[in-house]
Length: 100
Image (cartoon, rainbow, N blue to C red):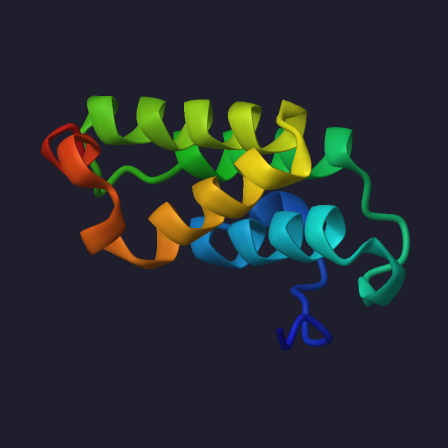
């Protein structure tokens, strides 16, 4: 993951995908995570804020993004791996694809 080039003010971030990458990095390979100061709580907050600010998406999709961030931050590593794969590979979502 190329996470070295982060925005100056994380609270202005709209990229849900970038934050998914950061959660994946922090949870799945914490020893290699390049962003100092990241924590699960911080990334959860940023993920919820970014999801809420996605004015281009229906409310249902924004709520699903928020639920994804909550689940990814709170889940054990194996479930986080599955959540990350569903975020990046839509064909792995199965019936969840209908909700997005």
